[in-house]
Image (cartoon, rainbow, N blue to C red; front, top):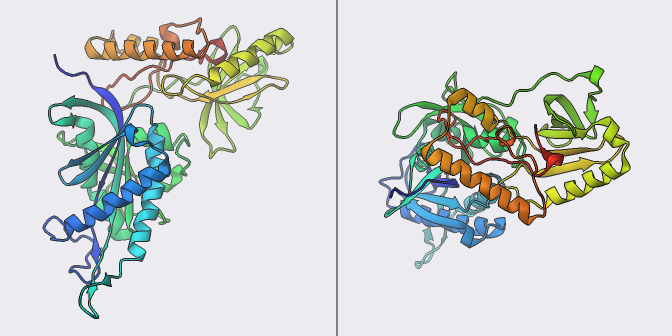
Length: 408
C-alpha cells in the first residue's frame, strides 16, 4: 500500500551567494558549488540554525533535519505552526548570520602574523507548507521540491544582489496568504514583495513573496503571474445597519457579514490594533444579550473554546461581554465543505479519507476540552488553504467548537 501524504511545514536554507573576505570573488552572484570553502560555510550555517532552533522554543523532537542536494531542510511536526518558522525562527537566523558576518575578519592561525580567513555568509531561506510522503529514502513530494526550488529562484539572487544584505526570505503563496497576511507571524505584510518562480518539476509560474530583512523599498524582481487560481473565498455580504449590524465591536471594525444563525451574526472584522489582521467576529443577537442566563452560558462556552487546541479548529483570539457580547476567532478564508462539494462534486480516495481524519481529530480534541459541537454539518466545516494555490487541495477541516463559535 502506498504511504499516505501528510501535511508538514518546512524551512529550506542555502548559501545562495557569498562575499568572501580574502578568499576569491567579491561578486554577489559568485557560485559556491565549486568553491572548496563551501563545506566550511555550510557548517557555519548549520551551527547558526542549531542556535536559532534552540532559542526559538521549538523542541528537537518536533523537527526533522535533512540534507537535500546540499541544502539544509527542516520539517516540523504538525503541532508546530508555520508561523513559528517565519517568526521567531527566521528572526533568530537573521541575527545569527549578521553576528557571524560582523566577526568574519579572520582569526589567528598557527604562523605569526597570519590569519585564517572566515566566510561572510549570504543565505537564502524559503518557507512552505504542503503534503509530503515518507518513503525508503526519507520525505519526498512536490511540496519539498517546491521549497527547495525556491532557493535557486531568480528572485533569491536578485534580492541579495540588489539589497546588499546577507539574508533573503522567500515564502510560498499559501504561507503568505494564510500566515503573514493575517498577521500571525507578527511581520508587516507590506515588507514582502510579490514575485514569480517556477513550480519544481512542472514549469508552471507561481506567485511567491520575497523579503529582505533590514532592507526598505522595492526591488527589481521577476513579475508574479497575473492570474493565480485559488479555492473560492468565503462569501461576504454587506452590513445591514437597519437590522442592527454595528460598524465596530471593541477594537474590531466590521467589514461585512459572513453568516447568521439562531444565536447571532458572524462578521468579517479587521483588528485595528493587530496590523489590520482579518478575523471572524460572532455577536449574539441583541435580545439574547439581555438574558443574563444566556450570557453566562455564552461566557462558559467561550472559556471552553479557549481550551481547544488550535491545530484542528479556528482558535479563539478575543471576546467581549459588554452591551453586545461577541467572540473573535481566526478567520478562515475558504469555502465550506458544502460549497466545495456543490462546486466540484463529491470527494473520493485519499482526499475523502484526509477530510474524515481531520474532522475526527477535531471532534476528539473538542470533546477532550469538555465541549460538544452540537451542529456538525458540511456547512460548518471550513476548508483552509494549504499547498500551492493552483492545486485543488482539500485540507483538514476547521470544525468550530460549539454554537458560540460557529461561523455559519
